[in-house]
Image (cartoon, rainbow, N blue to C red; front, side, top):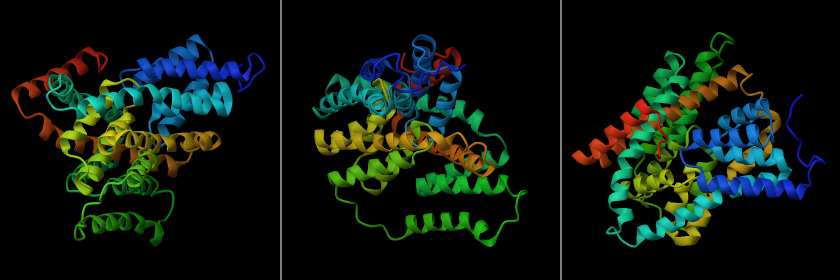
Length: 379
């Protein structure tokens, strides 16, 4: 018999369940260091073993669903669990309370950051954190790669994505193109490909190359509506680990729009790492740098909004995706492309941050500690 309580069960009132969800995820948002994997472990201990909001099987089902959706997986898990405990009010409370503490901390740190490069925060702290960020991303890439690269087509697709990313190909085009390509390759024996189907992947890549190599347009002038739309797009299409956010942000905000420098981007990613809660609060930091408090609030709302939408509509359908050979293979391709983007980011940001013996030493020692001792990345 499942121990999963349905929302608004008569054992407690709806208001009490809402308070439970809000108080737990607010506390988790204040203390949950270590990234999505650590967040998931903390949630499992609390809601399955201690509070018994859901049973093991339900937790696994929700975890699989969150990992298949675009967006921040640990935030989506908080939204799912909030809904399971307290219905639609819990859905909102779970996500908002998990995000809110990190957002407020990041706004404070962004304000300190803008006060000047002589502050300790922007000096020795950031100098030490940047190489550690590279090591953390590398460890995540290594761990996820062993699971994602299941065969030679997937491995080849990942390598091709790295090369195409480094020459400036559109990130979304690479994700979709890899997904379609693997879907077609893995299912080639099931059907006889029509001319339309076989043309999908070349069309995607052709459009991507044309978009990237047409004469360059002038950099877009910054505005709050454009900032909102940029982060809304990223929140809606980002597959894979939150670290893939690096690739999207660098391509759009540094390379195309010229709103940020590489240094500012890496500082923003570092802030997302050293604060508890979702890594996606990097968007909060960037929004503050570009548009003050209104920019921070709009960026945070935009990048997390799709996660609430996806959770609300996905319940009855996501569990069936892996049962489909076509959809499952598409997701395999998207996942390996995400890892390729992560590798490309490591190469680019490593060149700009590992520039002296101290930073190189910190990076190497951090990687050795992470791989050998299996410590908390932010310990």
